Length: 273
Image (cartoon, rainbow, N blue to C red; front, side, top):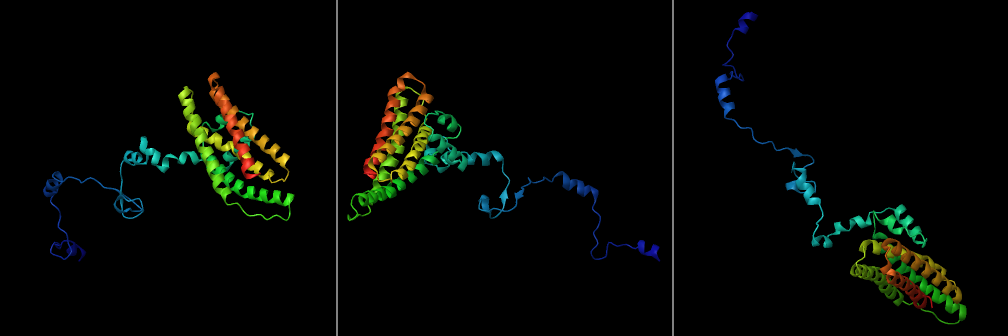
């Protein structure tokens, strides 16, 4: 019975598939061209959009890398990505540079920031100094008036904020820029970002001195501000001299010392009278 079932023809049964002729198979395969594979990446992105929708087709890594490269021409000045490298610092680096600014005779600040100069310290210290001068200046005025005459009235001077912002931001931005063009004119090496970085950290000592200037003793205030200005001037001049190492930049070092001392006197006279 089993032998009889195995010899029955099955081509007329439903669902049966006839054998494929070898000649037709060879004929079809000779003229068949395999289309180029188009691999896709999951999760899908819509139309190449990087937002995470649709499917994204694999591309050559060189094309994508070319899009991520920052512009090297003048258009890079207006690109935010061109300035991200100057804010790539952590807390330990900033604290180390702040402490270095309090050692004016070390003269190695440029060596510390040579590989990674930052503008974070310039903006953060300048902004802190603006608010410290505006707030502590009013507080010092109140203490001085109450120390001399307890019956006198006192009012908060809002103008301290505008004056502090114009003076500090203007000094931190314009003075390094002026020295940069001066040294370029004299034929000496100068780097604008490193100048901004150094002058920004040189203002940190005035933040600490502002808290000491709250003491309502006039002679002690002058001693504090002169010592602070001299330390800041020594920090700037020492680093400039060690970096340039030329005889024709003596006037540049003297000018830097004079400007730091002038800023210190201005802080004392205007905000802590």
